[in-house]
Image 1 (cartoon, helix red, strand yellow):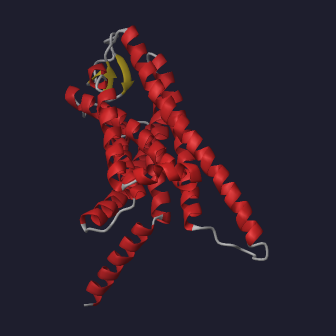
Image 2: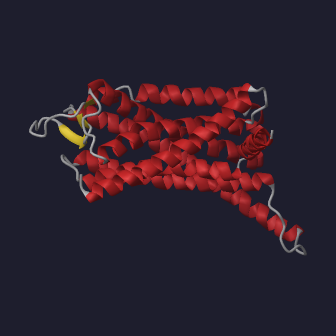
Length: 309
């Protein structure tokens, strides 16, 4: 194992560990709050599904690539490769649609015209049903993915394409591959367009709100932003980072798809870009979510009391 592979393995390991710990903490907090009978906001239900999809992305892409970087090459068999790539495609798509749902929900709360129409349709049951539809959509949309993948093969077998060290791609009909690519691109384009539109609407609302606040508090030195404005700023930061990481990952994935034997550094950069948002987003949620801070403070208080007694 070369020094470059060792360095990439360490980077992938840190990235996966930070992301999995952060997403697992958030998923535990939201699930605990739901099971204990506390009322969850619709946004919390959306975030619960988003961190679940993020964790699945890291488990299905980050961990296998980390093991491959450390020199483990034949740790997955044929069924394992099919499951791993199917889980990654599904979780990647769910993360896209859930982030789109999150930005649309926040935009509907800020925009006066949209909020009046959507006010009766943003109940926890409706949001939960929308999240369920997101999972069903991508489970069905990516059902063709396992048929394209197989376990690692001998490099002398030129009929198979070695995309990753631990898995290979079976030769497929070009027409079918092109049709699947068009379908994937269509759904990605729709979700990203809605996301950009909702983010643009939130930016306009925030700018107008800032102008009103500056006018009302013209004599105040540091007017505090509202809770809704802070939540919107957090979501805008998450959406913009998601769009950047998703577009970069998609471009690199297209490059890998058109190259028969892609370079190892190209594959590593693609995996790193695909895992950036699942690693970055829980850190933002942890620093800004009230549920997490209350949960951590309660756990710390109980631990302190138990140590004293």
